[in-house]
Image (cartoon, rainbow, N blue to C red):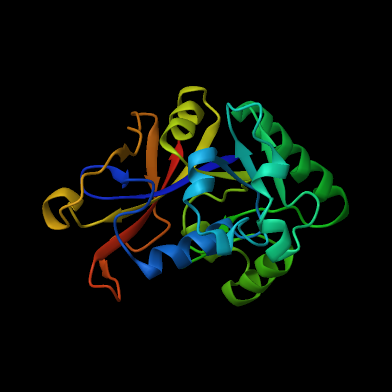
Length: 235
């Protein structure tokens, strides 16, 4: 299964000038918890927008999709490899979303034969777990799986698409996407922050439905912004 993950303001803005026009530490922590252990697929601009100190995203296979034939792993890793001791396979560059998905799903199948593949399952508090030990620990505290079932439909994720808007749209239009993790931010970046958004979340059709994975009420970030997490699955 393929998941999409993003944060958006009231009007669907997900980015401005190559970055996110807000700072919500809880959303960053949520993104890390959700994607940890699974491959992450992103476009070239999303890769460029990541802080060089934190790319490639650790403990996740980073797969970058670009139309530029001349831009490959050597260019992407030119300085990251020196700083982080990049290992073979931590970063791969492909030239089509279909290639990226094939790589990610092949990994899940291959790893499943020898050790736990990156999988994600919702627990009672909506956390997504990515390894057998974490799932076992959750089950030991939640009983015989009742809590996990109560959090909504169980999902196993082969890879997360983390941006940008073109990859989101392609994944949705082609039927690749199965799950959406969406952080709703109670802010209008244009009106409240004076920032003009230039990248927008895709519209989800009637075949998508919300599942009760998280608290539905708004929470308040340490930064003062209100937010809530949502999970949607294709019906």
